[in-house]
Image 1 (cartoon, rainbow, N blue to C red):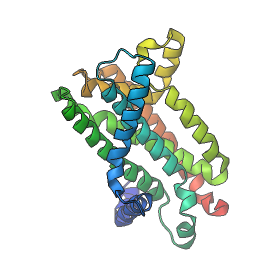
Image 2: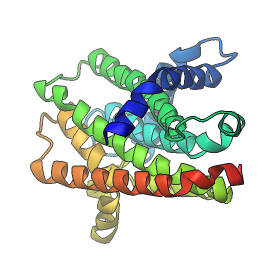
Image 3: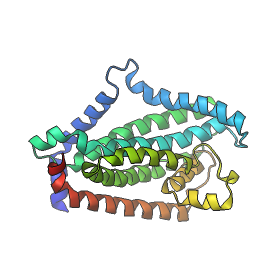
Image 4: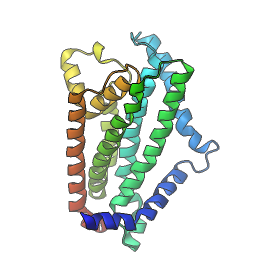
Length: 258
């Protein structure tokens, strides 16, 4: 383990450069630049809240905040895993020239998405203040579900990055999967409107548990829940373990498929 830590510290400056590169590429030739990380979720919140609050008449207090909190969680997962998935393939030219720990490319994409997550979280806080929503002390626990989300996304990203090197079709299949997953996550709708059989399926989605914990501490002044927290930690630990194992087993053959 000490060898891996020393190796990571040795290449830590490179990780910082990769993160900066990812952010610059994402907002290159953009007039507003990083400001879009604040404006994008706010604009989507306005559009979706107008449509769904009037179309479906959801009985949710402060529906725009409910919707924005769902976007903060799910958009990060979608952006982080999608970008991590292509991280090795898109860095093929560098990987072929010099030795670099290949997991750094996945980490850089996850961390750059994390910066966007913090900007979106800031937008959520600003909307809460603007709408005079009550900020409880439980809000201080919000980093717990967010950290679990980042680590879970890292595990998924490592698996996707390793598999995509050999099977490029994964990139197309995953876009379909993400669309389906969005509807199986209570981003827009409340769990109360679902029939029992569908509610059970939605609860099997690990993102659902993290999202519910996040909303509990942000809006409902409710503790995370020991059972929900334990489940999230176990699911995250399993996903991270599988992710690192799959990546480690396949990284030596990356060069052959790039």
